[in-house]
Image (cartoon, rainbow, N blue to C red; front, side, top):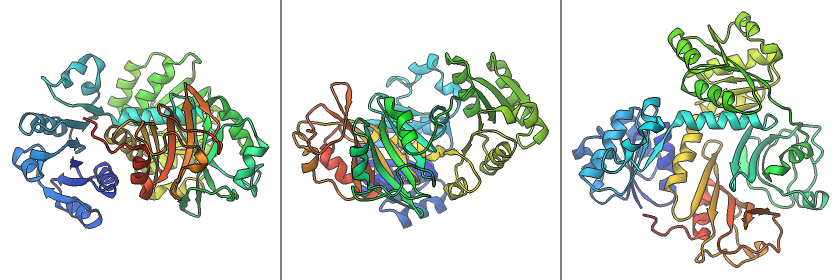
Length: 458
């Protein structure tokens, strides 16, 4: 597949990294020659320096015979015009654009993206993706990472393993015997900074971070087995009233369980906009690092603080201060992956990486065949790929024990006839089943081969 990626920033670079590693023909376009050079020096891609919306630049990038264009520059308008030029001049079939401005995303203007208007096939909103991720973190406060799969029948839970975890020093193969009705699989373990797919004989140790794929109905039980307790979130303080904070507050207001939220925003204009848009949420104008203001927001009685300003270090410090003042849980937005190792020592319970959520969303729309969802783990170190099994797939008709999965790949879940099945050696994978597979980055191409998804999808 021939793909042009416009924008070589964090998101564009990660998408290029994924696609280039899977032997696609990738060209990266950016106005910044340093970013283009970084991409060409570190990845197997071509680089073009110039404005992505200029027809001559797209022609140099190979738009005449490109299969797809991904517009992920920092400008919404450039992304939109790039897709228009790609359609009108070069007839590129698949066009994906990242758009941030809420006005462009309002559902009442959705007709704007029809082919006879502004021909964009898929619109990605980082703010909406991050807000959804934040809500998922709030729904599973005992996990540092979480994502839904298999039509919300399954959850991926990131769990820190502590000294009091009941199943430490227990071979993973024994978990199925100890908890025979539990539909849960440990698909990944991060130990001393390295992520790997565990074997049946591997054990969990204190300090590990385990990624567990479990049936949604078994979430509370799974957390309990791994030494965590699930508590209900009733009072939430949101630091940052911009697009992400406002989206989260609106969603919380709309929920039936009536979670009480308060928003703290430093910028007066943004605070006033949030106050006008929200009905039951109290909006406070001021610095989220101000201890007196946090006290006014009753941070000590809050079940969770959600720090989602546009400054990573502010989010980190706010989360630490909130926990020191008695807040039970802290969730921190961080664009910088180098800050992630600081989270656990600073007692920050969970983090959201906007780049990872955006990359996951884009990958979901560019994988071939019947791929339904893709979730990027860590710094693009691994993926959970959810896909429907095709007749042509090498795994169709095989028992799980007979499938030759690579060392870095594990089967997390299988849905048959709308119900999640327990992963056992004699489970037969059949056409039409929906599977969720954990794969380290180097093994993603092999997973696509096993799913027989390298067919044309246009």
